Image (cartoon, rainbow over all chains, first blue to last red; front, side):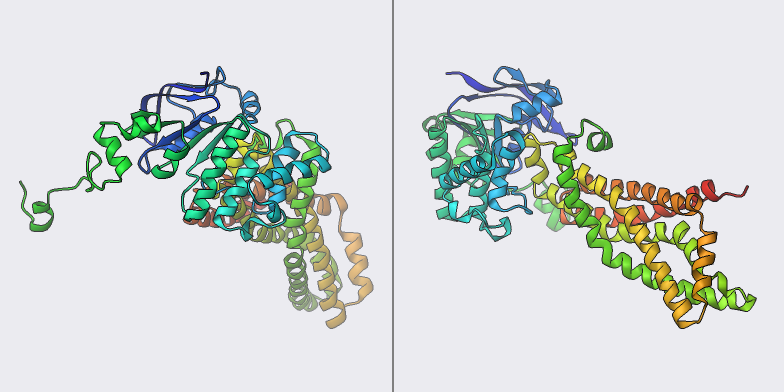
Amino acid sequence: MENLIEINNLTFSRSGRIIYDDISLKIKKGKTTAIMGPSGIGKTTMLRLIGGQLVPDKGDIVFKGESIPGMRRNRLFEVRRQMSMLFQSGALFTDMSVFDNIAFPLREHTKLPESVIHTVVMLKLQAVGLRGAAELMPAELSGGMARRAALARAIALDPELIMYDEPFGGQDPISMGVLVKLIKALNDALQLTSVVVTHDVTEVLTIADYIYILAEQRVIGSGTPEQIKNSDSPLVQQFLQGQADGPVPFHYPATSTDEAFLGRTS
Amino acid sequence: MLFGAIIAKPQPLKLIPLTIKQIHVVGVQSLLIVVVSGLFIGMVMALQGYTILVSYGAEGSLGPMVALSLLRELGPVVTALLFAGRAGSALTAEIGLMKATEQLSSLEMMAVDPLRRIIAPRLWAGIISMPMLALIFSAVGILGGHLVGVDWLGVDSGSYWSIMQSTVDWNKDVVNGIIKTIVFAFVITWIATFKGYDSVPTSEGISKATTETVVFSSLAVLGLDFILTALMFGIE
């Protein structure tokens, strides 16, 4: 199966701290790939690198055979029309209604008449179950509704790739179930390629076709959900089981307890 | 960033409607404070000016005194300071919040340049609005001066207007005042939009950026006012 994205020997650092050290990933076309890992590992940074908002120190990110870091600005903007991103906060434009938010990319990048845009927007809202909320402002939406509206905007131009940045974060069980269903349904119905960045293990194991687990600046585990569940890596198992202590220690590095509480040096 | 915002390949069809909307936000919504401030400053100037001029028997010169002070200095400078405090801080806060809520990032990922979509309309709106606000400030200030000087203190109305008309020079006073305002508008709006775009996307970062916009803009206006005044009206 063809790879839509190939990340080859990527090294990226920020403020002197190495985020990724010579990692390689492949995102298969038409599949849902999950990128998981502990908080603060740089999962969102990976999406920004794929989208060309950040430039790697070394290595390459190839999208449909073209190098993202090597692209000129105009070409990068053209390529971005083939991808979209669902941000953690939704990132709806607060001065526009839900309808105008979803119509925005259509008005910016197409010459469709308003009547057609209206139909397209309503179809996208219907797909996410928010057709009745078209005239609401983002401030009037619940967190789950805002995320669904942002999802409708993300699919407005029928992109080839959708990147989801922590789509389940802060959601109640019902909203989470709705989002899981939508991600899977849209991926299948629209023949999309999805990249889901999350640390919600239970949810992502139900929808992902392939999983990468990142930790300690590298890929510590990869495979299908079954392969990941059966992984013999202690780090992978600590992450999947949610164990408080293990290869990722509970205690942040500090001086010994004798020194801290009794003033004794060893 | 400045080049990207205002020079690189402008798109008039998209820029003009956005700019008009921003002119309403930064210009029209600043009218109240500009008009009220202009009125009171004109009134105070007339009051203060009269007390000095009357001792020399020159109260007839109240009109040109008020008009020249407003057109050359107070109109551009006070309008700029009010604009920095009201519209400049609002611009910084708005853009900073857009950055904090990832709206700017989402624009980039939708292949829309945030410099052209967000920054450029606000920059042009400031440059267009401020000279008009300064002229309104000066006009209302002159009327305020008339209210106090003529209606209250009894200066002859004919003297007030006729000596003003013969003293105020279009190029030297009015145009120079407009030039000052355009320079101030560019500097204030540029500082405001840059501070918002460059702010740390946290509540503390936006608060700091907003404060810096007002302080830096105000100092820049006062410094540039001295330089421009020296160039325009310097000792010959």
